[in-house]
Length: 291
Image (tube, rainbow, N blue to C red; front, side):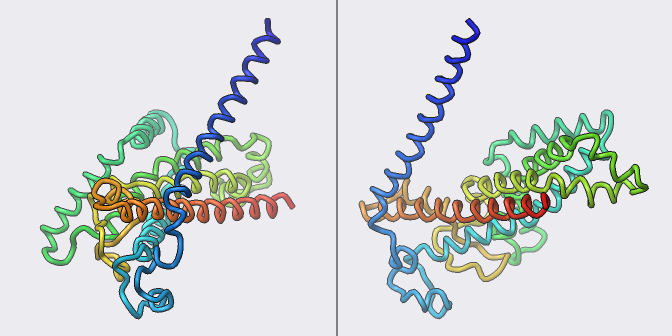
């Protein structure tokens, strides 16, 4: 009976894996089939010569280059703000938090992790209205507020991943540095964090994906269809997720819909590039730490 259950579990696991594998390649194949013909310089720069677009000699309004740059800027700013806050909070939860304070904060972070992105977007929109009242004509929906809203959205993931990584350090390793006179802070920065840095980077990789794909938050806090390249943190911007949503819901001809599929391929490429870069960094750090 036990062997039968074991074989059943193995078959179920492989079936789930193959199903996920097939769905993934079906989605990729469908996107390439629908939008593969649009891939090229015209998709990014429209009628503007690529070199002029890259050097910002001419504005690009009928290509996806501004949306690609806006997406990259949005993700990098949001993750750049969230990493120090999330890692620091995770260190506190793992090493300093105790008793009811830790329990309350744990419940709070779990609730924040389960918040729908539209709620975070509405909070960012409310912040925008408040700032606009205090600074009329100076602050409105913009790249910075969108990045801050996305930062708030991904913070629980960073906090929890850092906390779980530090709490999984073996007791023998945890007690090594204090045994030779190191303080708790020295133990955290010289022993615990380096030993679990790859796991923390894994949480950062998940946060990058969460920030890159969200539409509801940025839709309410600063993204527009046509804004050109973002020249300031306090200006509106373009982003690929919103462009895909806009085109798929309001396209007027098949060519526009095909552009939407091309934008989806471009967004997947950007996410894959960010993931691979973070993964290679994680592997490099793991190799150096094991030497």
